[in-house]
Figure 1: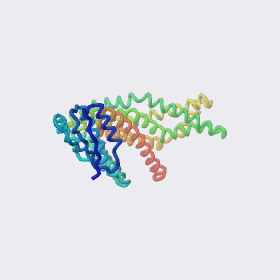
Figure 2 (figure 1 turned 30 degrees about the vertical axis):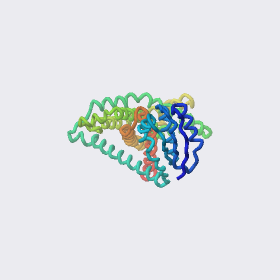
Figure 3 (figure 1 turned 60 degrees about the horizontal axis):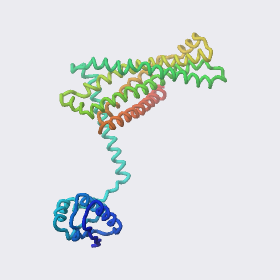
Figure 4 (figure 1 turned 45 degrees about the horizontal axis):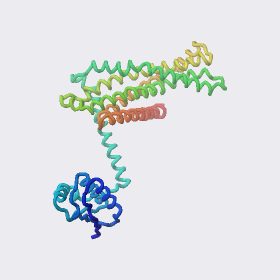
Length: 361
């Protein structure tokens, strides 16, 4: 056995303990299995000195060695008996390294578990929204009205403003591109078709996800942290029926209406540029816009909003209910919900594009 030997000081206190700790580090050599500390000359030891002994023991334990005290007597021996459990604890096991496949498996298992939880929550919420009320199991109509006001009415201004500015920008850029061909009147066609099919629903959904999706996640996350969710379950209330159903149905009703207002605002923004900058008469611009508007384009855009609404609410609720930690966890889950909302909106839009342009087109 490879041992190291040191003599203890006459008094083991804060200063001598720190010096002893430095001396141990200085004389330590790789491969040593034990440090023998001779305390025969040590007459007294205080609490800081004992703390330094524990620090020395931790240093040795990290190097898979141990500390052994010899020659102690009197009060020093009594003190060491109190420290014995910490001084004689076994060295830590070497950390096992995980391979790339183990890490990948952990990620896949965590993703599958979260997906299963999300699907279970979605099925439960859809049942309590679309089926349970017709079975006489109750519906919180007052909460639904409050959510419609919060998600729909209070979002009208920002939705209309964002779509108006988007229509203005697109008209500005597209008019510059077709100016050399003398086809600026067709900017009206571009605006109405683009907003009817894509922009009105997508821009509106992104604004709502940043506003309402974040609010839903923060609300439920705060309730989870403060154990209000557990209290509801303890009172025998179904969380999906009590909290999620009013939000889900409210956004399903509100988002298509907001998208229609967004469409009108976007077309109006393009019209402002066409009339005030491009110099077209309002009647000419209006006629060109109406001739390019088709119900199929509007139907496609409005159909998306129903799926957008479900995604925004369910992702917000899912992240809010699985929060861990305190206020920091609430903030992280709120941010995560918004990011997941926007990503899911783009994915849903891609699916609709494939279906309408390559399958039904």
